[in-house]
Length: 310
Ligand SMILES: Cc1cc2nc3c(=O)[nH]c(=O)nc-3n(C[C@H](O)[C@H](O)[C@H](O)COP(=O)(O)OP(=O)(O)OC[C@H]3O[C@@H](n4cnc5c(N)ncnc54)[C@H](O)[C@@H]3O)c2cc1C
Image (cartoon, rainbow, N blue to C red; front, side, top):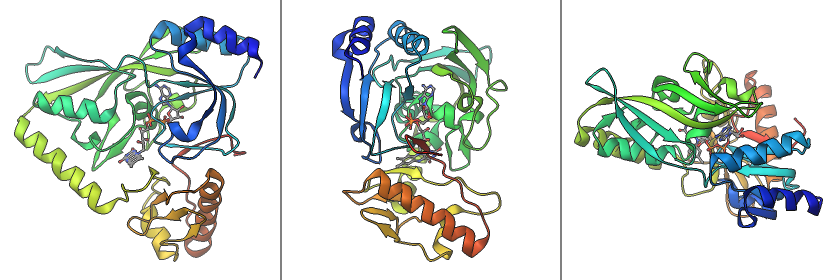
């Protein structure tokens, strides 16, 4: 990338927050992915706005990254600017509502779901238990309508403040976000989630913490958390479970290099150590083709692909 462009981005948000030729394997839970020409870690909204404005105005390709826990990035990396949101404000603010049994919780983009869930539990607030073991950021969770164990973000979200395509902060209600299964309107628009308001119920701290403990034990028992992955690799096809279809198609443990269909949970593709993104991508392709051939069901990746021809 032109040194002049990097120099200008450094001027916008400080040289120590701008990195060249960064291995994206350090930013994804799969631990794979080649270098980004440039990666920026803005630490506040003004810096974020400035960088976004600059790349949009100059038509420089860019991609927004939360915690990188639902991403497969090509081994060729990304030719452009990755805007990583990890260093943004991650504050959580608790406010009373008009209803005495409900609390409004504002969480900012730098916050993880796990921290939100843990802090809410410590205050005896109910509603985020399902999310305690989902390793994403607040923004990524809204984009994906993250969910587990019968709960999803849509159930607790009141509104999200986003940066729109013109650089304005806009408030989107739950209905505006058009949540669906692992989807929201943000996937079709170039919005950036800045903060989210959740409505949680007052409950019993002990019961809430016990529920979180139990759900996390279930996860550890059923999911291959000991290996890098991006969680469930495939969307759940209507009327089926992806993991069961994959197992029934004889693909349990199927491997390309160090990429493998987990033997513990066939819905997870794992990196046994030295997998490349190309291994993972090929394996996903094989799984989709074989499951279709054996069962007639078309699987679709849940994870987001960056740098592949889709
Ligand atoms: C071990 C493991 C278990 C998991 N379990 C679950 C589970 O139970 N349920 C579930 O739903 N998911 C699960 N996941 C997947 C993942 O954690 C979720 O999809 C999560 O919501 C992704 O958040 P992220 O911040 O990591 O997003 P990223 O992976 O960084 O990004 C995902 C998408 O969101 C966009 N994005 C991220 N942040 C923003 C933002 N602030 N504004 C605009 N766009 C943004 C990115 O551009 C990208 O398109 C699991 C993953 C792992 C590794």
